[in-house]
Length: 289
Image 1 (cartoon, rainbow, N blue to C red):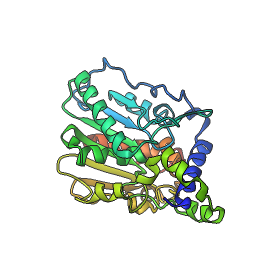
Image 2 (image 1 turned 90 degrees about the horizontal axis):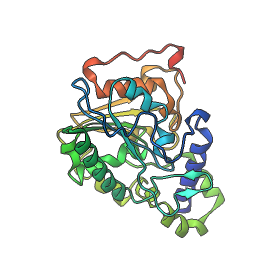
Image 3 (image 1 turned 45 degrees about the vertical axis):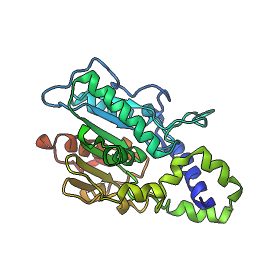
C-alpha cells in the first residue's frame, strides 16, 4: 500500500476526532442512548430492529449519540456494536474500531444480527451505517448470504466503491512516509480494503451493487472529502435510492463526519426506514448544519 494512501487514513482519523462536536463524545465503549435494550419488542409499526454500525476510527457511542435518540423517539428497537477492533484499538484517546479487515467485521456483524433476531423475534433487521459501517454490511449481505436477514440498508457517506481520499493523498505525497507502510498496513488493514481498486472492493462489487430483496438508501454530501469522490458512494440497482443532501437544500454544508449530526440526514434516514410515512425534508435554518 502506498505511503500516500496510508497517511491519508491517518489524516482521516485525526480529522474525525478533531471535528466531532463536544456533545458527541460519549463513552467510547458504551452503547449510544437507547441502544441495546435486549428486552425491546419491535412494534407492528416498526417490525424490524435497527442495527447501527459506526465508521472507521470510531465507535458506537461516539458515532450515534445524535441519530440513536432519533430512532428511539420514532419507536424503533435499536442495537449497536463496536466492530473491527484489534490490538491497536485501545489508545490514550480511547477506543477506536473498524480497523480489522472489513470481511472479518462483516462476519462479526452476522453473529450480532443473529443475536438481535433471536432476542426480538423479528424476521429481519434494518441497518444504518456511517462510512465503512454503510459499506461493510454489503459484504455480509452479498458475500456471506445475509441479504435474507436485512430489510433495509441505509448508508450515510458509505465508501461503496472505495475512496481515493482526495486531497489527503496530495498532502501525503509531499511528506513521503514510506517508512510507515509496513506498520500501518498491519495496524489498520481496513484502510487497504477501502481503497479504490482494492481486492476487497473489486470482489464486493463484482456481481453488481445490490442483490434482490433488501432496500438500499445512500445519503451523501458533495462536501465529503473522505469517501471521495462522493459520486462513488451511490449504488445502482432497482432497490437503490441515492440522496445528495445539497440536491435537497443547496445551502446545507455537512462533510463526511458532521453528517452524523445533521437533522436533514436524520430525516432522510427515518424516511428510508419508513417510506410509507415519509416526511418532506425541511430546508429552513434549523436544517442547515
